[in-house]
Amino acid sequence: MDFKLTEEQEVLRKMVKDFAEKELKPNAARIDKSHEFPVDNVKKAAELGLMGVAVPEQWGGAGMDYVSYAIAIEEVSRACATTGVILSVNNSLVCDPLKTFGNDMQKEKFLIPLASGRKIGCFGLTEPNAGTDAANQSTTAVRKGDEYIINGTKNFITNGSVADTAIFFAITDRSKGSKGISCFAIEKGTPGFRAGKEEDKLGICASACSELVFENVRIPAANRIGAEGEGFKIAMYTLDGGRIGIAAQAVGIARAAEEEAVAYSKQRVQFGQPISSFQGIQWMLAEMHLKLEAARLLTFNAAWARQHKDRCSVESAMAKLFAAEAATKITHDAIQIHGGYGYVKEYPVERFYRDARITEIYEGTNEVQKMVIASSLLK
Ligand SMILES: Cc1cc2nc3c(=O)[nH]c(=O)nc-3n(C[C@H](O)[C@H](O)[C@H](O)COP(=O)(O)OP(=O)(O)OC[C@H]3O[C@@H](n4cnc5c(N)ncnc54)[C@H](O)[C@@H]3O)c2cc1C
Image (cartoon, rainbow, N blue to C red; front, side, top):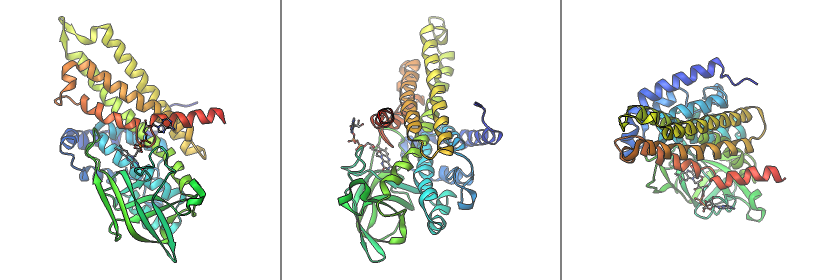
């Protein structure tokens, strides 16, 4: 077993790290405060191929593998977790289903502009009554000739109000339960389709998160991704990949917090010595590092499985669950090591703590990941 990154992956890590340090980190606190969507960050990330890392070059992407994707999201999120989730959604939740289930015409029309970053995408699965129980969809798609007529509302959609293209799910046959759900693409500006209420969030504050509202929206039948009734399968397959992105986001946030905690512990003096000389602090740092490394290994393991296996649901669930819990604990302890200074906005660790918390919720809560893991043991 070889744990070394390839030369190509090492080059990518360095390139993304340099980019994130120079272009993203200096603005992260400002956009956290202003809640201003970071258009420039996305544009610059797109120039480096980071909007479609694991999409073949033929379809507008960087043509790399999923481990490279995890590396890129970790490095971006270490500098700016908001930008991390924007890119993660575009890569895994939008480009990936188009790459896997779209036909050539759909790849040409939707995937190339999204993977190259000329356009930005969002993924609409969640509804007010379909959160963890994602199959309980209310949005409907009724076939009329060569079109579908869509009605319903999605909520909590990352990139929702800024997206040019949305991948979304709707019921085409209610009698069939989860097998009556289908997947569609829709473009901004389609009559009757609009973003609704924008959420004011605890963390990842500059990422847009809104409702998507469909009122008698007509879309061509050619916008259906995959077969009728295949939508839930597409959504679950897509989330397997998305959870790797969120695990990588958690690893990036946790790494930023650990770095700040180590540096602060070496310069903060109490009782006439740096607090890093106290065993209580050292043990906290050791626990942080242990969790961080384990989280990254699980994330890479899931990314490797995504690349080489048909499905990676369990690997992805384990990576996301572990990395999210690790990020919450590591950012919590980073504040502890900073004492009162950790609680104020002059230092970045309070932002890391707020940013980390969502990784335990979106793309399936911790409880959902445990359901996936347990059901694999009990089948
Ligand atoms: C900032 C943000 C961004 C998001 N981005 C997107 C996006 O881009 N696209 C999208 O489609 N969705 C998105 N979501 C939605 C997100 O995926 C859901 O919020 C999440 O899946 C949980 O659903 P819910 O909020 O309805 O919680 P609920 O399903 O109501 O769950 C509430 C609690 O009950 C627990 N629970 C529920 N069922 C069970 C069970 N059977 N056993 C044990 N515990 C259970 C849950 O784990 C949770 O703790 C986003 C959410 C947020 C906050």
